[in-house]
Figure 1: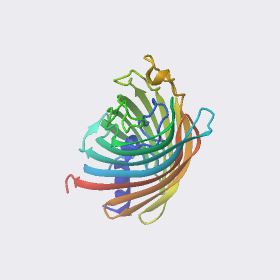
Figure 2: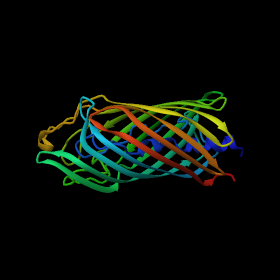
Figure 3: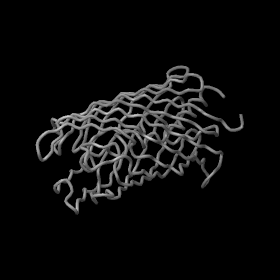
Length: 312
């Protein structure tokens, strides 16, 4: 297997780490609940690329983030948010075709630690911290098609579990509601370039304990990277996030409070290096504009390791 194949393999296997990274305290979701995925969760990879070999693979994506909460006018508030998270993912590429494309499936488990200061409550500012399992992603189907040489399209569907949540905590790693996410991506992989776009939609159910419903939202993640030497790629990344519906609070949870619609955009840099069979990616991102959400700087470290390659 040559270097180009190795790089494409590990990129392709990374595609749904997008769904299980966390980067905010409150956004489209009810008070104290992290968003289902962070801003830019699928940047830095050729999202639609197929895996050129079949097998079982392990991926991890860890990050640290230092943020503030921004109000409806995009102004920074006193609320500070520090998040450490690691996502452990298992990928199955069984060598089967579905609807004329390559089929694969994913399971991603996030472990999250949150510390927040100066959280606004009815009794004044307070501090909160928590850790646990976030919303586990089950992606039973992701399909990649080759439209023409070096140009790909993929589509998939994910289900997110409620995760760890308690009504007595100011912040929580989980959501306590189910979320369903169809997505579609395209990747241009010619002449050493990776130009990729990924569009996701999140349909949220209501909180199972208080019936608060977080508004549905959409994410657009963008990547433009170039191979600059053996096993090395570098480039720019960006993202846009938009909440499409208002939150609903029919039972007046949190004293009847409602979060406003969230929106955000940001940019960053991405560097990927291949070390034998192991793929390493490092990224730095920062928000450009944020409303009704947490925003700030984030450092990402992503690793992909093949566990078993079928037929070898």
